[in-house]
Each structure stands twice: as structure tokens, then as C-alpha cells.
Image (cartoon, rainbow, N blue to C red; front, side, top):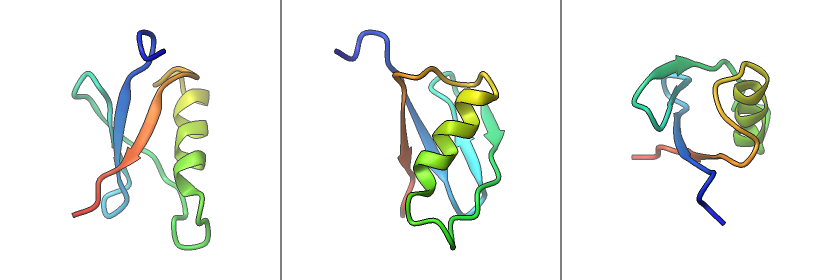
Length: 62
């Protein structure tokens, strides 16, 4: 199930997505007005060619 998937971490305080490879990309999403902003982050990352459809985007929350 997870063979073709990777986990990527989004930090909303900096609006950055840390890819599985360690690369960090800026993804601008209005997380204040969108309770489902992680879905928006994933869609932007997919449309930019950064991640695959089967990948997961998680939130870094400390």
C-alpha cells in the first residue's frame, strides 16, 4: 500500500513543505481561512510536480 508513497511535512508557521528527499519548498496556502489547508498544500505540490498523487502531506505541529 505504501510502496509508491512518501510522507512530506508542512510547517504552516513558515509555509514550507519539507519533501521526503530533504528538499524544502515554499507553498503558500491561506491556512487561516481553510480548515482543510493540508489538502490545498497537497494539490499545489502535485500541480507543481513536487510530489505524487499517492504521497501524504502531514503537518509539523510543535
